[in-house]
Image 1: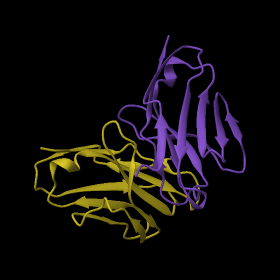
Image 2: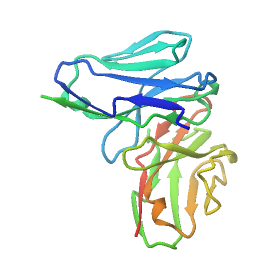
Image 3: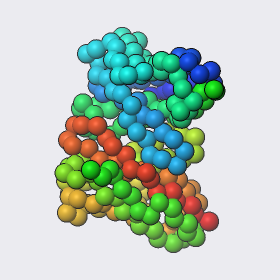
Image 4: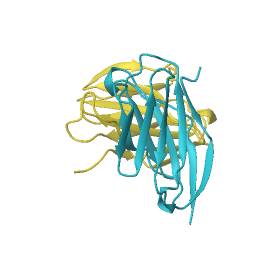
Length: 113
Length: 112
């Protein structure tokens, strides 16, 4: 049973566009929702994370929107650049992130020049 | 400040052989996690330690897999009698209690 569902599987945008990646979760005990960026051959790197007591968090060009009632959260990348081309994973955890992360299947983002 | 390191970065082995991977976490991080990632999928949790205590093991971790963190610092993951289905990227992450999990570069295992 997949606990975190991520869409779309792949996404192509032009430079300057605003790609949006969506995730939905089932376990209401989740209380920590990070997004990771992964380049080929590298380990995932944390981009931004949110807890359910806020509906939006912004760090630089990355914004997480969180809808607790719908059990959904999304990542928006403002003014996307070719260097943002990577695979993005949403994840969820309990106990404030101290427990295991449950990952979505990933979204491969391509930003064309 | 060094990040999480993993060795080897690549391992090719024949089916039935044993392999061992090492993870060195960020200094003073008391939690250490192992995940497995196959092509086109997100990382899947295998096990994690707080200091030297192994607190949780996934059902993915069959009896051919064993992990240790003997002194609460580095950790090893051993796979005995490897199978082709074990081919994957094995990722290690560390964190300070409930903080961010920082991932290493991974060890890519290929079982022929």
